Length: 199
Image (tube, rainbow, N blue to C red; front, top):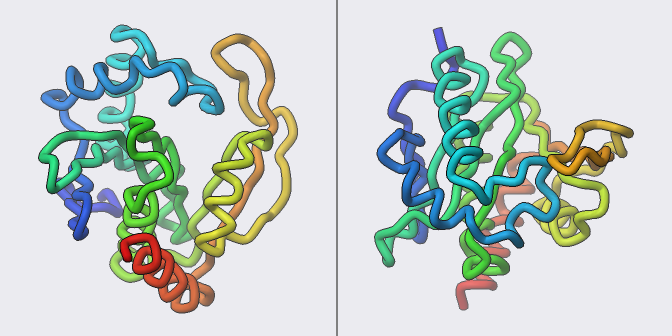
């Protein structure tokens, strides 16, 4: 039995996180054609073929209980603006990872990513009762590292030669986490960050 219920939707004030389905593929492909998105992500999804391969695999992994992919829907604009997922799900150890988060560049440095993280972390700690939520990024992705630190992700170090990029080079990954005993403080911090960015 999967830890995350099928059809789970996470609803915020700005965005709604909706389970990825085949009907979303074409709209996501149009967004993924923006090359800047993939600078620090090991897979280059600027082609339709690669997008469909990755999305099909994500849905299969969801069926197995290993991942739960979402599309990010901007509520006011009524359109998909990116994707994110819960992954490396280990129910026996009550831990999982937030990853594969990408947004169309128009929404970088807005409230969108903050609200996505608030929705996902609230779900992980308060609904799933996880004890650990992990996040990782390319060690050279300073913007992403600062964003994770800003939401109180605790830096755990660099895993060397962690992933192989699409161009064949090897990536070192910076690992971060939040644990359940830190969640109340981190949640208040996230709410404050959101309020400050909204006002």
